[in-house]
Length: 124
Image (cartoon, rainbow, N blue to C red; front, side):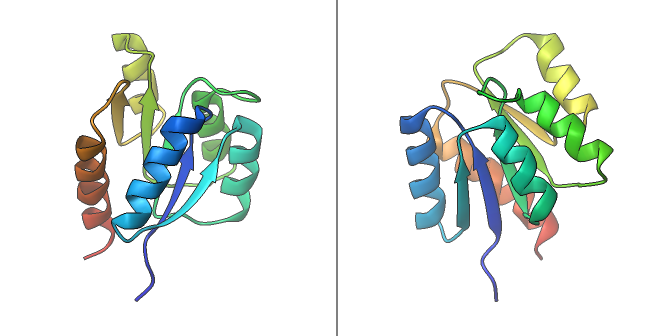
């Protein structure tokens, strides 16, 4: 059985490293990405079981990436991960199709738990 594939889009090196290593240790195949434009390209070419998508990044904002994937007919479960904590930002992300929104700073255990819940819905 193939390991679930997760795209981690995060420009903060320490956060990206923590997420990538923890998810890999939990048995997932992780593709890290630090730029919104790169994330857009990767998401247009490859399939993922889940995407952890930061909002503020170089290139394109996370919500712009999500909008462009939607416009191109690409659909992944997306969990937004952001230090932007305003209610309107959370609502906008959810309305664009994000399945969850995790506010920074976060607990890595909470992130793993949310990832497991989302992947359980995809992978029986």
